[in-house]
Image 1 (cartoon, rainbow, N blue to C red):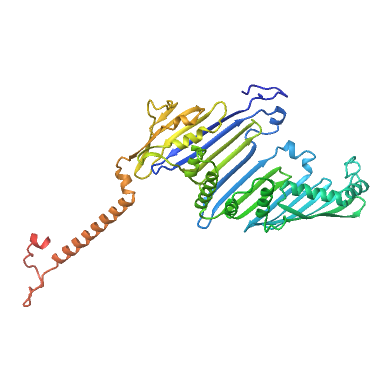
Image 2: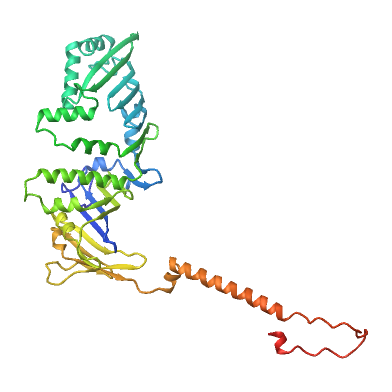
Length: 496
């Protein structure tokens, strides 16, 4: 796609995307899912030249199971090219800092921007809860006829005229309030939207803006207000939706966000952490089951699809997910990799020889790119068993592009449902003496043997000691010192 390019040339206008899916089928019939996608897209050479090879936006997300929570941690880093952050107007941005924390569905935070532009030293303090959203912003504005000619920041007179038409105009303020309320389907009511301004001198102004919103009407919180708004504008919300929404909100027990940008280095860093309930997987599956039960009960008899039935019967594990992504603005490429997602799908057949029709039928409804997706099926293993991937002949399964002793790969698959008859056979692992010794039964046996050996040594030592004791000499005259006859050698009975 990409050939040698001269100055001002651009890449091909074609965007190419390819997906790779890895399914690891384990002896307990759980399936681990790995996904990788890569995309190349056209990018103008003048933009590409600003970035060094490999320089782009990188991010990573991991879920970690801890004793009292499942913690999701996301890190994003982006290094702006020097040609950008060192040039006006970007070079005038000195720093940006955003921090926020959340607990019990209430959030508080602050935003600070320091720059050399007309609007300087912006500070925003905000707080949210199920019943209140508030924000207060302050900033200093500096006027300059030479720098901002033709804008509201040219001089105080022009700025005052603009301010009078906005924050000093009741009609304008009410219009903005209505637009905000309409954008939220009237789930909230804007109580306060106002601003004040002072002029310490002819070349600057101090501005303050206040915002406050509460649930609309008689609603006790924003969830209720949103449900009421949706019910008013469309078919009434089915019973049970409220419980599902509130259960989903309770999954999060805490959050923290830190965003920093350093103008002198052009580096942007985002750190985001979310604490979920410790039994996240169980609660997430419970919410999923409630949702599908609700959806399936609302559908007319006979209209439920096999894919819906499959998803309803499949449990998921997300607490071990990890994901990375990279946007390369030099080459015009984007890639994402996901690992650690596990599902427990319904299977067909015996526990040791089964198929997973629903997985591939559901996957077959997905739209891949024109080149299709690469799909690899791998047989997993545990301490006792391993899974063998069996591609049956004459069952409508295309021949794999490549195979190994425990895997099969199909390239450029257009319809994944063609793989639904692939079988997975659970086989006992060949006996391994080393594996046995390192297993739990092996450790027990080793302990018994060690105890028996130690007991035998002790008994032998005691027996030997008791038989080699010198006999007690009878009383009577003793042999006088001197050279006398040598003692007789010990008999075998004395030794053993």
